[in-house]
Length: 389
Ligand code: SAH
Figure 1 (cartoon, protein in one colour):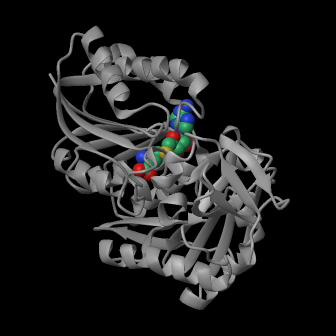
Figure 2 (cartoon, helix red, strand yellow):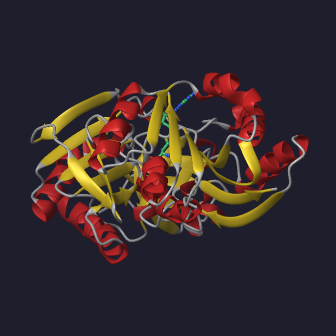
């Protein structure tokens, strides 16, 4: 069968040949066969060599998202196979069925994220082609898992670029919660209400790592969400934990989770971190451990400069609150701020505050967020642990 095809310009095909999944609109020399939004196209090098097949969308900067080298019809069987491959990895990694089951391009399902909370599944789609194949995705999930519920959490800004609406709905079952046991700390998660797709699985191993700094510590957890770090630290010997988040839904869930774990050493403040910090900034040396895990400060390259300034100011305020020989556990999930840059900013802030840093540990997202070495865009989370002198 002859497919519609996209031929790349000379010198623009090396990245795709090396395994990157995105063809940008300015890299295309010629389109043949009149493909429509969401159709499968064959991608060819400038010399007409086949590089594989991808989903087409002429209306976006990312014109093709590759999903296979050898042709495969993206039907139900295809989705079953790909989800099974993804499941194989998660089964080996985790001892409870709570994880990011499918992480888009990194699991060769571009534009599709699926989080699993035991029998509850939360789906986020960010491309028109995936949206068209939703029936196959649902069939595949029903066949593999007999889910109790499936939610659609299609509220990401990237959907607008693909001409897709913002929606949240229950596709199967009813709204319900699931109790996720993070190696001894329980989180009651409502995947239909929680932020993004319900819960931040990406920080799981970093939260478990954070436990070693808990003993006897006065902890501040900034951008706490539902208590990911706060409760791990509170459960593992912290003297006190103060959690701050601006989302009322998140702090309410944090309080519930705190009770669920029988923790008495956690207090919660629903506040904007900047406002909170200006309120306490002058007190100095109040906390032994500060956790900082803000949302992304930039969604494009243009705002990187502003993001850098925001990171620096935030960390300057943190250093004002940390005791001598305290611990900073800080994260950045801004795609466009690379690790090296992030670490320079944190160090710059420390120097401005007369502090000296020792970097103890570097990490990224948990392994249910695989990284494609050929595609740097699949890596985003930076987590660093510092001793602050
Ligand atoms: N550490 C958490 C995840 C944090 S996600 C975990 O492990 O689960 C980032 C959080 O920052 C979100 O909960 C969001 O509500 C919060 N947030 C975003 N902007 C904020 C602001 N200006 N002040 C306080 N919280 C903010």
